[in-house]
Image (cartoon, rainbow, N blue to C red):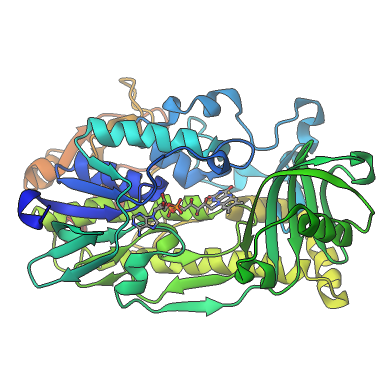
Length: 505
Ligand SMILES: Cc1cc2nc3c(=O)[nH]c(=O)nc-3n(C[C@H](O)[C@H](O)[C@H](O)COP(=O)(O)OP(=O)(O)OC[C@H]3O[C@@H](n4cnc5c(N)ncnc54)[C@H](O)[C@@H]3O)c2cc1C
């Protein structure tokens, strides 16, 4: 089959992982035609199911899913509200960690986060990769996205007008190509992107095993002089071995003997593994593409950045990329994008990626098996046991501080919009399901409506008081839920006009 047999799509996405699927949903919501080419024939995998497939969701991801009506479709969200739920522990409950050091719920002072309203979505939840991908696949298909499974992208060629994408002997045409094809992204490798960063300190193992003498291992997460091991459930192991990432890079098979040798060394026991059912390895290699766009080719998710899964941030980072990119790329395709809109994807998301990579490097650094790292580890542990310390770490891990530098005419500019509850009933998050920008006017000011009307169907005008307005009179909200402009008193109309002109054509 040749390219002539296929329709031309607005966007081809490489990879039906969570990031590719969510991006496809955003583009299709904005009426773009999307084809996903996915290498794997079967979307199911043991590694995506619990307990391997467990993923911590941070506040921006939870808000994103809520704003598109997806949060309540996740059954696991309804079952388990908190990553480390243990009601008996009450305020002593662990609600996150840094390098394995827990911070406790009772120590986190959420009152320091001024703009979080009581009706906000949760700050952290657990999810299962398999369920998340299933929910996103259903939504993508319902929105008209075509997903071709068993189609690995093998090459592509871009011109001024579009991209021709190869999968084996088939070719497909699109105007844009987005690489959401994970850490070993072919789109990144063939697309001329530089992938700069640092080499790993350790090899991480995730394995399902039978242990003949499990009592020899301590429960919970154990940071030891040579690494870390954790038994999350009987027989489910996570190990970190500070071998410079050597085993992961060696591409040797992961045998029972090898996992046992590593576990014995790291746990300093003579524990015996009697069966190895499944195992995978990963590292703390931290690299990031130095640009996220090359002509008509873009990157998002693990294709754009990789780092250790310590504290679990990669999925959150990738879904944040997709939420940021989707409406900008759609506006570009629809010729409704002001100058520079698409490039703001990189200028906003690259710094967030830097922070996450550094967060994972910092954890790897204090977990190293040497006296200097152990000394630092002890100091960080003490700080995390203070109220301000726990609040800081929770804010970072839960993504509370994530924002973009859009200029600071108001302290909320560049931040995620608080979940205002209008007196007539709806929350602002519920009003964002159609993916449109919103001018929210608490005082029903006719001049604000006039500004909104100038942008036609790009900008929705919503007026009326909210139960708690946080002292604001009006807010301009981008389709991704980021505040583009806010006013606390009488609105400055010319400031609003220039903010609107910056984001909408
Ligand atoms: C042990 C572990 C625990 C983790 N825990 C967390 C956590 O708690 N929280 C968190 O936020 N993150 C966590 N992560 C990270 C998270 O899983 C990843 O960041 C996330 O899966 C990235 O999503 P993605 O869609 O970018 O890439 P992927 O999930 O890797 O999906 C990429 C897709 O592209 C496909 N593909 C690859 N090559 C091609 C090709 N040539 N053509 C077409 N398709 C292709 C692949 O088959 C795959 O389906 C963890 C990771 C690991 C390893």
